[in-house]
Length: 347
Image (cartoon, rainbow, N blue to C red; front, side, top):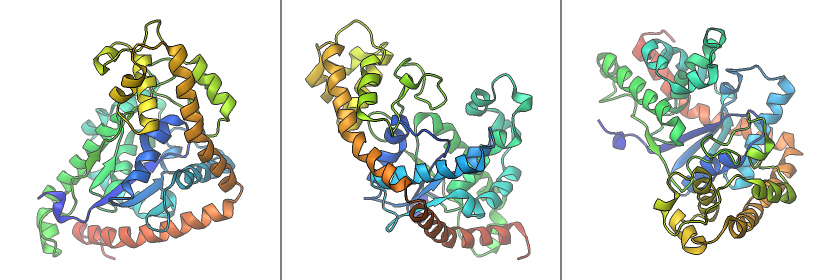
């Protein structure tokens, strides 16, 4: 059964781990704003995911949750017509994650490359939460029977796992699903939405690595709260090669840093990489970088300004999150009640 019989719904989340950067903005938040025009959307600050590696000091985590929410709002996410909330206020996420811990197989989780990356050599000392968080991610999506998830390239594997879990639940419990009055599959198989030129923004210092807040060099990323001078400086110092920009996209192959900067320009202006090269092909980076820096400043400065204003109104942000959590719960609770009936839990 295809997801066409399910109400079309988008779910996505951003971890509140501090220091939001250009990669978060172009890889996720811009897409959130665009999807509002065509879909019913739930946008979640996934604070339970934020404690899988390290437990943050409570005042830091609270601040980070508000910062992500402020970024959503400043970029144009509309909390009146869509749902903006933080995960820990909706207990159905954790409740369903436990069910999925019992549906997912250890072999599936062992194949998750992100766990290997994050746990590193010290795998035995990683938290159980870090190992099983893809099950919580599946619960985030399926607690709302979401049909679509905007994902970057690095999250495709997690979405595949969510689909595997949904499929196993639908198949293993088919008889119980029917006996509880549901026709066909209980869960949809959520599909990825991959849009835009820069689905994956790379480090300004190393085009082979993703832009990350954990990189020790602040020059590797543009933070959403950086001022104009800082953005200009970071773009000026961004790593490039000695060749001129090519006239066609094929000429970017094997030139990771050039490809990254062209991709950032394309995504910030909402045009294709080829369109960027139509304007800058044959030119040196000394011409291209100032134009890119100016574009970044023009795009990000109003967002930074609005984020700072909102961060000075924590009560306003908290009210939006509480209201969003209430709306999210009205969708998730009946679904969770159905799951309890299917499993045979008495309620």
